Amino acid sequence: MPIFSSAYFPSLAYVRAVLHNPNFEIDLHEHFIKQSIRTRAEVLTANGLVQLNIPIVHVSGQKLTMAAIQIDYTKNWQAEHWRTIESAYGAAPHFEHYAHDIQGIFAKKHRFLHELNTEILHWLDQALALKLNISFSAEFTGQTNVNKKAWLERDVQISKAYKQVFGEPGGFIPNLSILDGLMNEGPMIRTYFLPR
Image 1 (cartoon, rainbow, N blue to C red):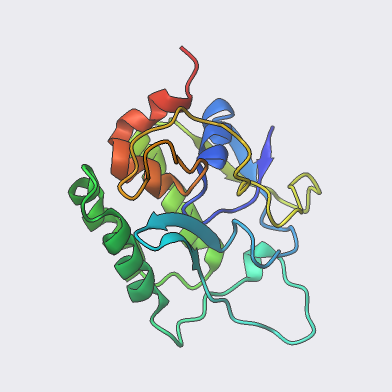
Image 2: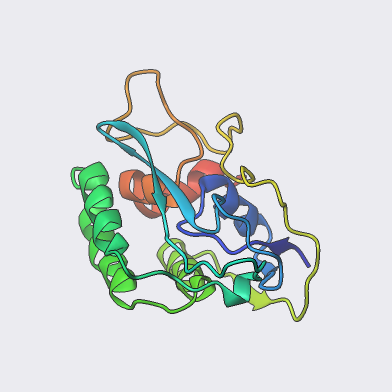
């Protein structure tokens, strides 16, 4: 069974991979890797590429597993992320369709990072009719990619180019967060990386 890391509003490459492997496990026993897809999503705004990063509670001198990573709510990062998403995609054709769901996800204030990321995956499963069967590893698998840039590369062409709100003619930016695909193409984004 394929093993994936937990991911925050994952990249199109990640979503394509789970679409092609709908029965998969998320490794909650891997060591947390900072500045990776686990806490980072990338969106395109009027000012260019912006990274949305979830702050986590740091425990001095300890390496924690994904299952133990808690979200830090000392700053209102959800409001900041929402403002960025609204600014980036408020004029996108499908923004109104997904806005309420995203605000609802932020409003829940999940204690653990993997809980937030799992809720996002379940929401994507429904929004895109992916028919995912997600399970969680019982122990460390060692099968997730430990490269912090994994799933975030720009040099992968995982989908056809689509119209981006702040894209320039001929300047499509590939492999952003699934938010970019959903807001601009809606559920039809599936057809951009599904084989016929």
